[in-house]
Length: 263
Image (tube, rainbow, N blue to C red; front, top):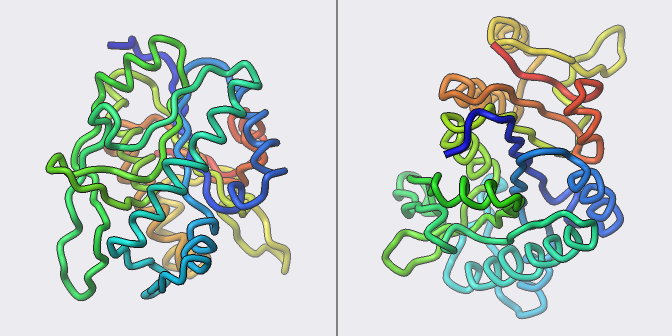
């Protein structure tokens, strides 16, 4: 196993993947990051566009996609196929050795189908186990794993899985071997608050501050579960979490952009 060197686990979503120019710029920044690193990506709109072209209806409930068998086939083709391999190829063009995978490859990420409660999300997986030895071996060889948001259950079933969750579970699982920095790159500059009518980034945020700002409704909506998950990851051994705009990845690492989530 590795010996507590810094590992950066970086997650990006559709705000990067949906725009080839932003993808190219981000990958240039990612390739320049020194040391051990893992990239976890979402899928973007390409899967939805392909489903429309194939006349496969898509169902969303509260913004979450229901994954039936046909939708899963499209997700695997797009996420673990075109999107994943295109980024790996671009990284090699930038002299950044990488390996593209989904959770089924090398038994990298085991999951189980999400239990049906109020809503049946279909073939959606909840992560159960990260293959730490496999990721550690790739990192030891100087490879940057590029992870698509598809997992498997060990019984032959692929599962569509939330990329934020995959990034968090990888970060938590590898925190015994590395000092892990988990970086969520999305379309905002960080965790925001209004000050004198101007929206500003909160540069550092600890749990006490978060609870106070949540009580004051300064932090609200979808940012609350994102931050609650962040503090849960810190409790599980992740060293630092940074949230900010994915195109500012190196500035985020240097502490010049985004919001740093710490105890």
